[in-house]
Image (cartoon, rainbow, N blue to C red):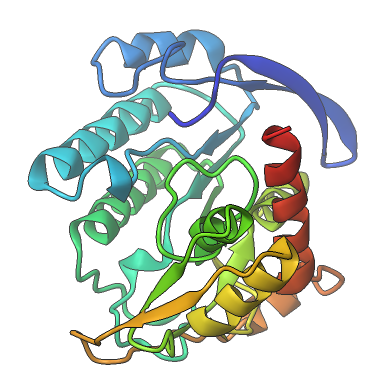
Length: 279
């Protein structure tokens, strides 16, 4: 749903060069019942289907948004019930875990505390139910917080901090920005997805670096990269300090040679992109 439009490219899957097709909501609107037939029309036998469509929290955190997302899940699950694709990769969110889960592992209890996490968990269960019948390999990826070029959410964190610092505007933190989170460069999500497609992986995998960084440290990096005198301000804290750490043992076992992009390098690449766009 977040793609700009239909596009095609090539990717290596199981040692073979395969074409890819990207579909946006203007091509197939998964909120609509007719999307089932439309998606079946483009999904061929032995195709790999990557599902990333969702209305993100910046579009709404209410029950209505949650239900629209679940409706999408119903439609792509119904499509898969009557299709013969070869592999499904679902990109969800670490929001399916309880906020107090630390360190987070793939075996941690899925107990979402918000509607966004709840809808991802429901969609995961829908897909699991379908593939039990169709025997299609299903890979569920649960990324941590993402940053990188092309972000449209501008949520609290790296993307917003970089934009503010670039303009010399103050960066405002909750409390002293002590909370530590595991931030993942968006290109790494693409790389992990590519590996899953190449090997037709199945199961559940958290997409996280294993290194959590405080929001204050990220703000400092953003200011340093910008070369401006952007001020870092701190608001009085209204909520308890919470951290989230990941145990990435499963990542290392699944893809031993894969390495996540160091945060400073990823932030530097993102900042360069923001600077080019504004020229």
